[in-house]
Image 1 (tube, rainbow, N blue to C red):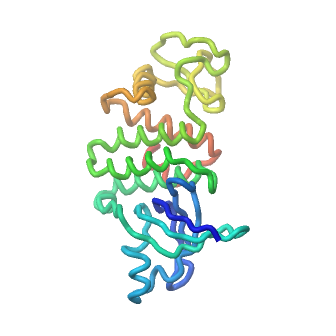
Image 2: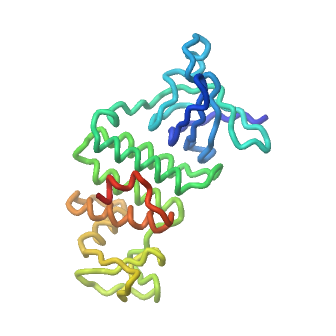
Image 3: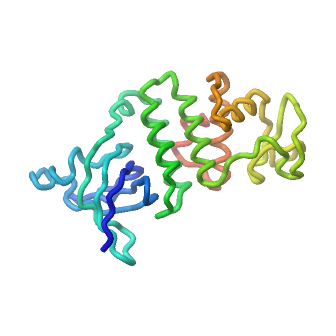
Amino acid sequence: MPRIKDQAICLRILDWSETSQIVELLTREHGKVRGLAKGSKRFAPSSIARFSGGIELMTGGQLLANHKANVDLLNITEWDLQQPFWHLRENLNTWQAGMYAVDLTSHLLADHDPHPQSYDALLDFLTATTDKQKLPTALLKFQWQMLSDAGYQPQLDHDVHTNQPLADQPTYQFDPQGGGLCNASNSDTWGVRKQTVSLLRAVSADDAFDDEGADRANKLLCSYARSILDKQLATMACVLG
């Protein structure tokens, strides 16, 4: 029975019984996993020692678990809370943005598929939200990194239909099915301001950028994620309005 020791962030949580929980975690080296934490809600000294700090949504820690072959759920034996991210619970906007971040992560990534860059992106985002003023730019970086690491990085430099260079224009067209910008407009494309395109190009290049226009860019990436998933997550409302 392979034993797993990894850093993890809690994406989802479900009460399994009065004393146990089923949790969905994004681990750094083992990808997205689900596990049963037996006794994690008990107040007995042995349970408190094994599940230090408790397992809560949008918290990070070190995971110890056993993985039995042909069994989907891990047997979580220990959890050491290391990143409680208390600030997420002190402001409604940061809480909603955090909920969207873990929800998007849960839906974009497949189980047991390691994505260390996605783990780092989520950890960086949850940490960056300590500064509420930087929330829009932090969310923009996170969405871009998550979409890119999942294989859906938007094409911003060439027409996704013709692979030809894009003409410089005040308003571009974005084709969510094609995964990027295009020159031709049709009923399936979205108009995107030049400022938004320039902002996304700066994010892609990891260049410094102003937060002006970040809300529009966040809405574009969120709408793109909605198209990829073919459904609107309830948590997307905090971005789309």
